[in-house]
Image (cartoon, rainbow, N blue to C red; front, side):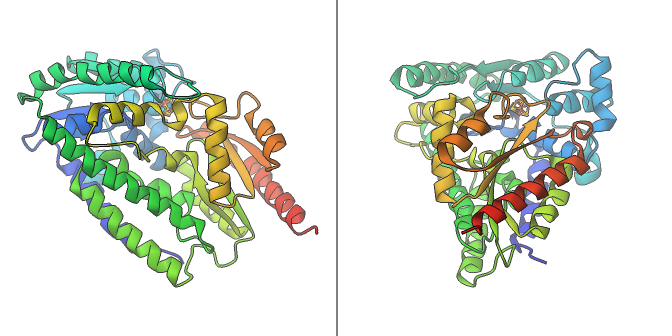
Length: 404
Ligand code: SF4
């Protein structure tokens, strides 16, 4: 069975991350594509509730918590990270107890969000700000842009700068632009390594699948801006490059190369990974894993480049811009077909609701399939139906590939 040695290191890195809270440093909560570098420059430990949501999804514990959030007034049809996280809090429980021996989630001193991914994060984080009587502040960039120009960057730069007094007051530290530059430089180095890691999957056989990527992306989400993340991706890249050189991949015989759009189905990662492998299909790239590549970071212009990088992300863009992202990824990874995961509770990261798969298929001639599911709430995922759809889709691609 194909296994990456670096996975062992990953487990320790993630464990150390969770154990670092409550050791004297102040804690800031941040959205997964929020201004983590600025927060770190003030000396905060940074905690990411979405990572907690993914953990609850992967451990299939959400169903213990979502009904409690629903009783409290949150719809079961909104972001299941949000409802699981709020429900777990109301139940005074978290898988962090079992997995890392923590008493609970890290208590916030400051809560910061960026609505570049969705507005749900504002509602979600406001619940916790109220519960903890904690200051909360957000960035609200323009959304759905074809291009991100100077006007938008200037606007978001101002919003980044408005965070400074909050951070100074809560951390007790004055803003230091050199620290910000240093953290941003480290973050850029890690994000470029992550990009190289993902791009090893251009090789055949590919040494990294989308499913592996969802696990190994942990440090680029929760530790970007630290030396730890940079070291981790150097080690992972080294291992993957060696595998490419030696012709070792997760699949010996790739008959089909697939792209995954949308959220992972956290509670079914193993099932789906095995399904594709059994069908000799390599899922080699995704919108999701590519979302943490911020190649516009530039320590010479830390505010403007952060504003640009965090506003330009795929999820925050117009359909026209998204089509160009897709075009590049499909070419880069030599994609034969695309699976769109239409996630019930994440409207924002589902691109199948307004006919985009059909338009891509017509414009680029690339076969697409939509499967319905959810990031965490498995009541919205019909495994039998999805397996049948995926297997039929793969058969169709294979027969059209070898029909000549
Ligand atoms: S992008 Fe989707 S999954 Fe992520 S926080 Fe927003 S609604 Fe939830």
